[in-house]
Length: 441
Image 1 (cartoon, one colour):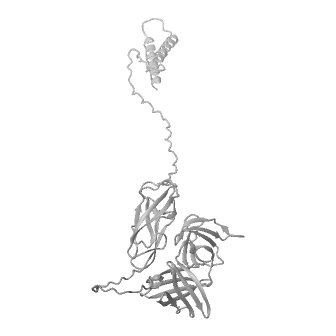
Image 2 (image 1 turned 30 degrees about the vertical axis):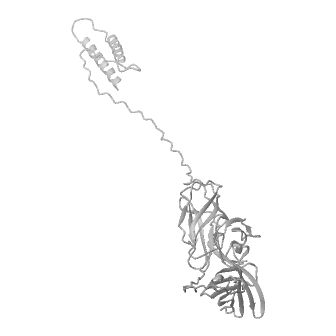
């Protein structure tokens, strides 16, 4: 637009000059208007063209013809250049590992101190030590702890901190200070590792002790007789016989399991002293599909035996109890003229009490059909089978430290919790499908 205005102004100046030159008067020859106009037009165009800006420079100044005043027009602002800017790339989110970035694992190895069923006096202090293995990929640090997980706490702390750093694959011994309860009986407490977030993991070691009844000590408060100088010849008598085990009621306390899990006789006896020489006895006999519950009978200590012949749900059954050695109960069974049959029992339950092939009592189940359990010391190998066609699905075998209940966690296709109920009865809770069923062996 600016260049067009300059051209127009130059053209107007030329026209004025032509008209001035061609005005009448002067008596001379009339001018050559055509030539004059052509020359002027050429000159004017050259002037206007000279006013155009040269590439790469600013606009050249324009000199107006005489008598013409140029009016400065406002300069048009430069138009902004629009540049498309690409937005900054945002990196795709990445997976963030867990807070630890590893997995926790713990395995029971052995009892270092206090074997199962160690006998203590009421209120006696002791220290239980277990040896564990770090079977995971996380290092156990001071934020980890060994915590009480259930059963009888026996005066122990809620937890003890892990000392130092325990690398994966390492063995570690952990100790807990405990106190035997004041009441005679069998006591058991379970303990387990916790990680830095307070979550339990790994196997569940336990401590099981027997608290014996205190022995009464007679105190002679009378003054001893004054000795004399007279010597009397005496004949040496027999050496006094120490009090035999089984002569007091509390010797029989305990939950006793038959040493032969396949027995067809007495499977389990629970004995509790009610007085110094009286006991109550709850018995079970082998039956199917569940053991016969004889309910409770009573008996009194006579010498080193107890005779129970009044089981409330088993009339005609007589059981004579004796203790041939500490931790062993012997029962001689008769019923309706049949017998006698002799059975030996141990205090439990222990890992060995779980051994056998356990079959679901619900023959039409669509879940777990049977579980084969073997025991080695305090370790249990568990081999479950799930309902499949044409043959049951084999879930494989995993080994655990003995615990009751036993939670298998994620070791099998389903998470199962096994609870040992009685000598030949257990329940299996499948938490994956929310089913609980009874099993027999």
